[in-house]
Length: 70
Image (cartoon, rainbow, N blue to C red; front, side, top):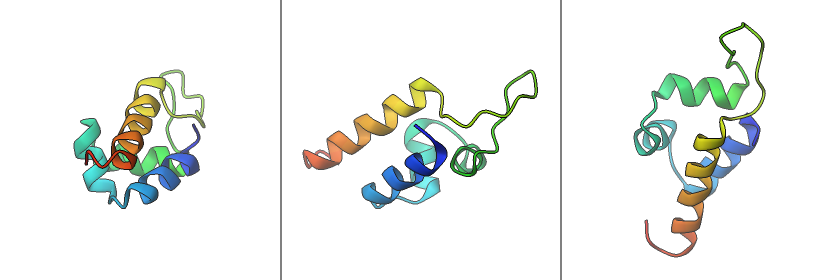
């Protein structure tokens, strides 16, 4: 999942960055950085993709939304 895909998913949920950050246990800054592709690894290398655990959590939120659970 790229940052733009994460933003699209968040928009499909109808959520703000704050709401997604709270749901994932992340900061709003982290969500913003992921969406803008500004996240860097410890080695300083730019990462364009979202960590798998965050990607999975986002996708699960979308599934729950489609089921009417949230």
